[in-house]
Length: 358
Ligand SMILES: Nc1ncnc2c1ncn2[C@@H]1O[C@H](COP(=O)(O)OP(=O)(O)OP(=O)(O)O)[C@@H](O)[C@H]1O
Image 1 (cartoon, rainbow, N blue to C red):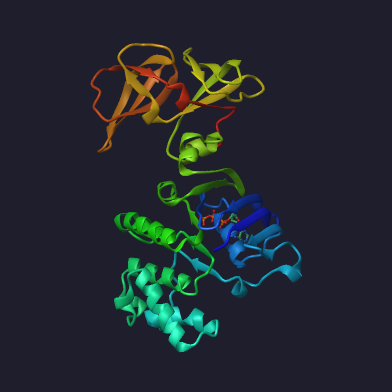
Image 2: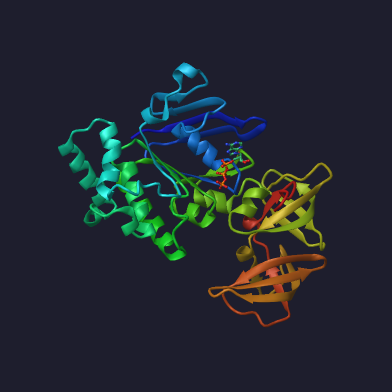
């Protein structure tokens, strides 16, 4: 297997900069996800690695093989990159059986019949589709077609697997099962994988690391836990899970902690953070991290319950303190019209501004 290096990768379509200065080192055997909203440049980045579009500048390297470095003579054409690719649309050849779909990439690589048959059996076995070798794609369910597409991408044992929203055509239940199964398979094969999705739950569930992208730029690269617990900016805090953003001002900014005053006058101790030039800031905290307590204490406030929604496994409330409205979440039902809350410092994050659209 091999590692993948993207160095200062920039991709422009005319005037549009789809990807700007992307730097990622995907370790050998790692499962890395590009995550972000529609149009953020995920697929463009993936396609550049596959050689299906033209990067403008930067370096793409797999192992010690340079695929792109800006010099036309060093650009490796897609068919010689030896990369496994699976798209959202399964792109199986409808007039070929499952086995023939898998045979095609091996024939292109001039592999003899007996070795081909062995590889096809092995790849179909991996995705548990061996009994379906002689069926045509239209005789399979969506989930089964996706497994065949995956087997076809793996049949020539590529060092790198690129997956572009491969599960998005499956229904919700099947999708959840498929992601567990996909991750198990990836670990077993130890194949370096880049996965593209806009679904944060999927990204958190399957990835070793996640690169969160927005408007062509990488906002944060880290483990699912890092991204969720320690978002680098207010865009990440908003895009991954959901966060409250409370306006405030910096009172004291230290190296270990900060003291801020929220719009309702409450003072909070928080981890260090940056305020804007005029001292204005936002405190981000997830609804499930705000504690409902008996007594008002440090980092606490009292709020009125404005709205209550039952979500099955949890209750969610909109509460108000002064002009400030935000959400809290509990696993039990609150009947009182007011609640006493505590904002654990370690779960607060201070940012200079709320991301536009957050
Ligand atoms: N062929 C093209 N010509 C011009 N602009 C393009 C082209 N392909 C993509 N773009 C633009 O590049 C940006 C990134 O697109 P890209 O498809 O990579 O986004 P994405 O994050 O994969 O989104 P989605 O989840 O919707 O597929 C967008 O602004 C898009 O409009």
